[in-house]
Image 1: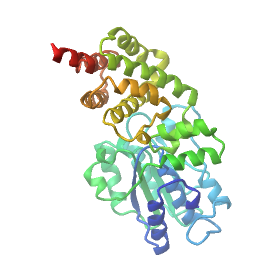
Image 2 (image 1 turned 30 degrees about the vertical axis):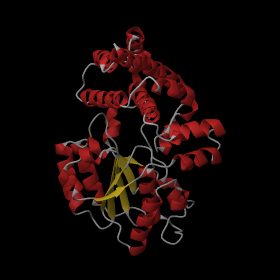
Image 3 (image 1 turned 180 degrees about the vertical axis):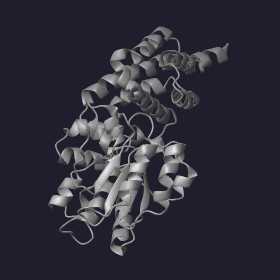
Image 4 (image 1 turned 45 degrees about the horizontal axis):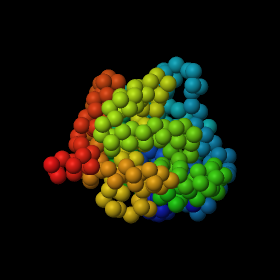
Length: 359
């Protein structure tokens, strides 16, 4: 039932109204940060229309149909990538999903959805097809989906899930009703972690604040790994604030690209950006309760004392610029070296500029 989902009360109300009015669109786009619950909300819609013992206009969550809809049959981790080119069905024969085998969603996957959507439901009242990371549609695969998005069969619903709706073709956007999901509040995330005994009080508070509104990220993160990564990124920020510790910056760049940490590259950039934003808030004399890494306040205050408000802004712009370059497969190692050295050279430390001004 929707009441069991965390956050996005506005979306819950909207979807309930659609169900009550019997006007659930055939093509929908759920947009919002990764981990805010878009897939769970989509599955709740599938339950609502296929539940054997509905509660009002919602699924009961406990009947055989509701239970089976919640379980996707993902291919084993060792399976061939060709397995991911098929529809990933739940235990319920009317609810399935497609995901990108590599970087892109494929034309054949969209044709599978079109074919399956035209079948009558095997067991329930409606068929549901989820397209995960819909921003990975290229022009060809998006065009292959257009017809069924424009005229979905009355017993089928297609829900596109994405954190980057701007990456979708206008022709796709125009055929879907967009539902925007907001980040989940730290208070809601913390309460969920405590209620389900996922973390203790201190850890839950940190997880909730650094999750950036993503409940999925707060739950999935390995907390010890996160603390280790944050410790390394704090050293980078300290070296940047000093402005003259180039050796430490190059060591950090080397660690960034170490084969042991290749799967942590994006998460380390995220953590570094979060630390920079915290220091920026303190530099601007902003409210301390806006600081994400509040348990690091003493160190962040020391760092912010060495900065003016322009440098953190420049650093974030430089990181985001490099992220865009990574999308075209540039070599990470020289890109990271160049990024850190450029950030260090952006401006001299505040104390040094004051000294120069007095000369």
